[in-house]
Figure 1 (spheres, rainbow, N blue to C red):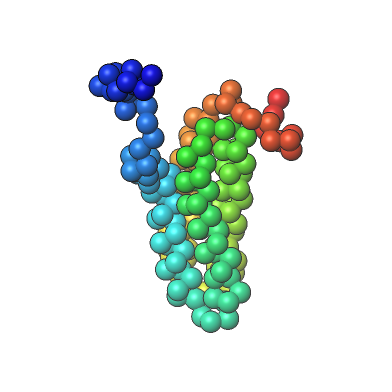
Figure 2: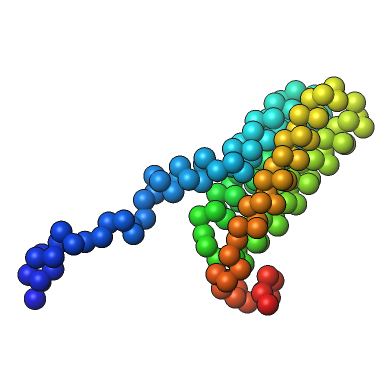
Length: 153
């Protein structure tokens, strides 16, 4: 019985197997992930230059916003379910908009030169453009109803 399996061993197809290293490279080399990493670096630099009071008030919020862009993209890109991808995309959108809004709050408080804040704003705008392209790539036929009624027909 088990001898049949051994005889056909050379016919085993390894191409369909999951390769974690290749999947990691695919996700982390994606233009949207690269832009999210850039935003994280810019945010970290901006937060690092805040005075202690503003760092305490805004720093953790800004860092959370920037970190979520990275983590939600990685998790969304690793699944095929449309509903879950859209859920993660909406979370990313909200945090990107929050981060952008914080640059205007910091400008009102005159914490940074406008050029420094513009770097982060420009990166968020580039992220938004890449984000729109990425969302269009989602396959709406690959969805599982999660019982919440969002992103279903």
